Image 1 (cartoon, helix red, strand yellow):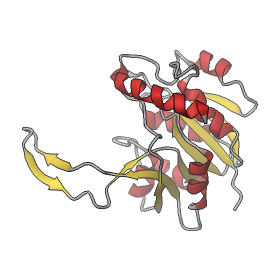
Image 2 (cartoon, one colour):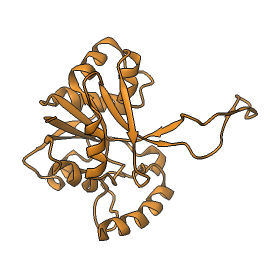
Image 3 (tube, rainbow, N blue to C red):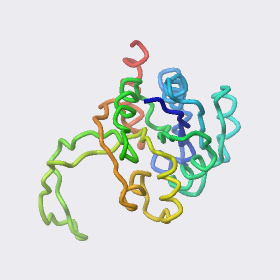
Image 4 (tube, rainbow, N blue to C red):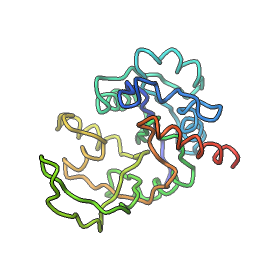
Length: 224
């Protein structure tokens, strides 16, 4: 199946958990974090348009750094969900692929797996990693109430692929309160979301420690 895809990279966060640092543009082994995923997505066979959602402080830098005939820069909103919606509303293609700039290490093989699963009747495809650690539920006083059966539990990654028509319909029928990824919107509307295997390296930079960890991954990644 052929796809015409708008890839949306979200880089409008304020970096509150990383001391206000703009993690999307920080140097990672000689290359800005956002450039890793931007380069991978911009050369992918189905991607016709690159939309990067930026904040007021990095929009000028982003336009210069990510210069491309496919690039459209869009201002972000107050939340991640609003920023993604801004990108989706600007997109021109039939399908949208939403990715967090703070996840630099994606591959064309991962993208192939995602696109292979967007079959008739499926509204969205998301990459996931099985939960490996023991998971416990604690109450408001930090006492353990129970140990959760981790069978079937997964950690969600991006990029996430959507039929734009389904996502736009979800935007019309729901608000964005409490939405942490766009697959939640499809779920709320009763749509079909398919999970595929993600990759271990596809980590999200959230804390200063994550940057240290990812520096090591980047050194190996750049050699390959």
